[in-house]
Length: 224
Image 1 (cartoon, rainbow, N blue to C red):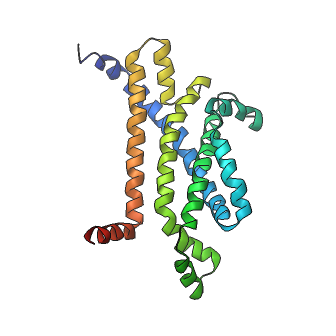
Image 2: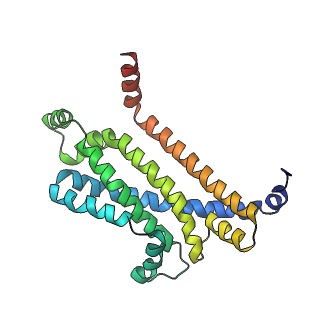
Image 3: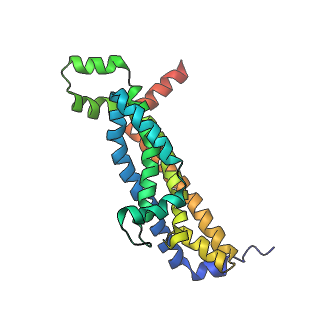
């Protein structure tokens, strides 16, 4: 087997690969960020009121079961966008992110020890300040864990947009399939996996950096 066979194609198409990678990151990461910003207040509401949790958590589960291609094709009908519009991919990815994170945020906030919130209330913390400075920081490890799942899922699902003409690395997969070019297909799939792993590792690192008390606790438990 000639191990050099992929390189001629790669050498001629670095610009295409770089452009498709940038498009894929734009398609996948922006909706995850939007979904996170929406999920935090929804998760907070679900953690505060039983009625909200009884509606939001099951609804999130139902939304996540909708097939991605079906949701992508429904967006133009709901929003009036053109068929080839990044929003047709990004809106479903944001919905899936919300579906994944609402339960994570709610469970993380519910897991904050009652004595911690009671102590904060005793020293005069109002609800908003308590949420931003006490509850949310303590919930970050669980939220980061859910966010990592959402990012990996979005990286994969963004490629489905190629079926309706949206670019990204999925476009290289469909193009390679049409041209019977296995190198192009394998390269695109490998890049999706590698990028997802890199972003996942970065989120794990960010989570450790912004929650130093978890490292201290882990070290103490290990010594014990």
